[in-house]
Image 1 (cartoon, rainbow, N blue to C red):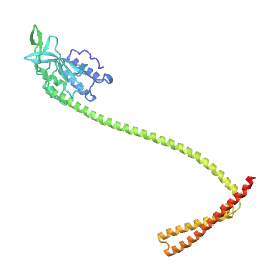
Image 2 (cartoon, rainbow, N blue to C red):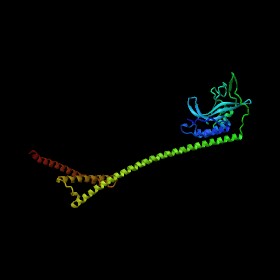
Image 3 (tube, helix red, strand yellow):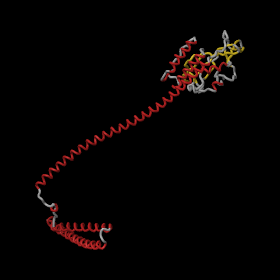
Image 4 (tube, rainbow, N blue to C red):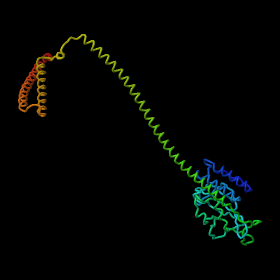
Length: 367
């Protein structure tokens, strides 16, 4: 909730000091108790309300609950008090409330007349509606953020407002002050200085807001880079961990292979000392004469087949003459035919020998 305002001081000097203190406290609130104004315009709002309190000492800044037409309620700043009206040589104090809406100063302030019980608002007035809202004032209709302020908004209201006292059933102007005084005038130099300062402050806040937005964008980009780097760091750490596990597994595997290698080398060394210098062809011997003859025929057949294939590649590449190729292939094919015929005879002899062996063992199983 917004801070509760203190009672306004009676004197003009103390009123300006009170406005300074109250606005500094109210606009510096953060969190749920913060007023719903943008940060980049709070200083400008403070300056406008301070200038309004200096121009109209009878208006005092406050924070109160404002209800919009759609039912929404919000704690907003207001300037509550009276506005001096000068008409026909007489001075009047007209009760009024100036509200600062949420989008202020992009939107004009809301000025309401708050007549007392013995006062009524003139119906069908061209500036004020029945609720007391000053809706058609030219200054508010032509509101511009850069050159308008609440203090200047009070000046056009010197026009006679539609408020009358109800005394004895008649309508009379509100009671004038005891001594009529001429309308206050401001020093043009002071007005120019105040407007220039307000414009400079507004420009400074706009530049600060733009700089802050740029810096926030840079910080967001840096945070994104930091998050990406952290993600990549996690990936690298996971890769290093898995590589370490794989290295450890490979080291264990290497130790196993080295142990097996030592065992095989020891076996080879031991058996090489006990063995003789036999030829490699004699390491495996056929079971009988037919098996040896079958091995020789098969080896010769395959060798002739490889030779014919080599001659085919050579004739395709043009390495040998065609007539020489024909003579060689004819001779090799003849030899291959004889080798295959011999292999068939040997295979038939092996089958007969196998049948005879099985027949010779049959009486043993029968007995």
